[in-house]
Image (cartoon, rainbow, N blue to C red; front, top):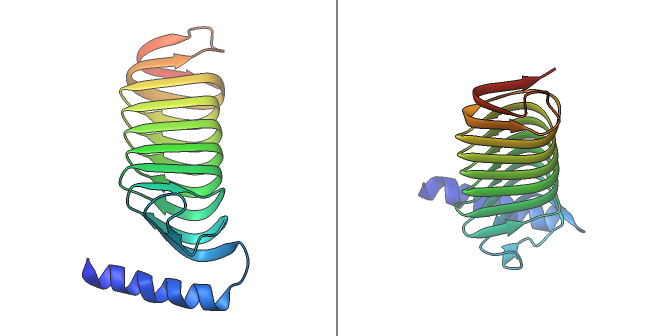
Length: 155
């Protein structure tokens, strides 16, 4: 673990020297404003400890507690994940998105608009374009059968 953290620090130090502006290929975060480098776009890996908020992620956003993004293309992993638009994977205890195409793994998954696969104890989707839900309780509000146990789908 020490070698991984040391490599991340070296990569981030190089990234901040070689990239100017609001983007970087790496970011380390403790809280939203306590981050190095404090950029609005990550094209690579963001590693956080408590809370990470980066408007645009292209790659991996990983945190122990909470991830927040406006636009995600890649993977988001934390206890709680939240994004406005996403294409990729959310993996956490609670996953929340407004518009997603991809996969959600967790205990509770929520999406306002979704296309893809959800696996959790409780899956709740307001508008499912195409997709499959597997869990104890599966809700697709725009379906002919809006509540199902074990499996629910809309194609």
